[in-house]
Length: 325
Image (cartoon, rainbow, N blue to C red):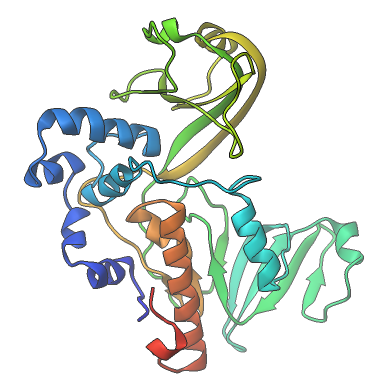
C-alpha cells in the first residue's frame, strides 16, 4: 500500500499512533504505567540526547527516542555515511551537487522547471542537454516530470521558491530544533561533571544546562588501548566556547563542530503533513513530523517512491510488486 499523508501511514501501522502524536510523552507514558521518576529521568535523558527536547514532545517521538536505549545498535566500517553513498552508486542515479533555487509548474506541458545554482565551468564540461538552459548567474533550469523534495520545507530551513503550482498541500508551519555536535579528541575532565570515576557516557535530564550529553566514540574495529587518545561527542543547544571546552577537557588535541537544524521541534497535539505537495510533487521529509530518524526517512522515501510510480503509471501497485513498507 501507499499513503498520501503521514496520518494515513501511521494509522495503517497502528491506529493508536495517531493518539500518540496528540499527547505529550510524559502524559502518554504515565498512561502506559511508567512512574514519574522513570519518565523524568530515563525517558527525559533519551529525548534530550536524541532530540534536544523534553517529555513535552509528543508520545510517538518519545517512543522512538526510547527505542534507541536498546544496546543492539550497529555501525558501518568507514562511517554510516557509506549507506547513502553506496545506495546512490548502485542505483545508477546522477547526482548534481547544486543548490535548488526555484521549482515552477509549467501548466501548458504539465512539467516542472527546476532551477539550481551550479559551477559554471564544471557544468560546461558535461555533455550538452537540450532540456537545460544556463544563465550568466550560474543558474541552471531543467525540466522534470516528477519532483521529489527530500529536505525540510519550514521557513527556517528552506529558501526554495515554489511558483504557479496547480495546488499546494498544507505543510506544517513549525520550526526545526538546533543541535550543536562537537567532536573532541582529547582527555575528558570527569570531575567537571561531578564524576570521581571515569564514565563513557554522561546524560542530562534538564533542558537548560550547557550540554545535553557527552559520549565516548569508539572505533568500529576496536576499543582504544589505555593511554591512546580518546574521542568524545558532545551535544549542546548552542556552540561551546573555548573556555567551556577547556574546562570540560584536561587536554584538547582536535575539535570539530557541526551546527545544524537537526529535527523538528515537537509538541503535543502535533500537526502531521502530507507526502504529496502538488501533482507529481512529493515531500519525503513530511514523515519527520512523526519522528525524525534515519529509519523513519527510509520508510518515508520508499512510500514516496511507490506513490510517485503508482500515480505516474496510473496503476495500483500490488503486493506482487513488493509495495509493502
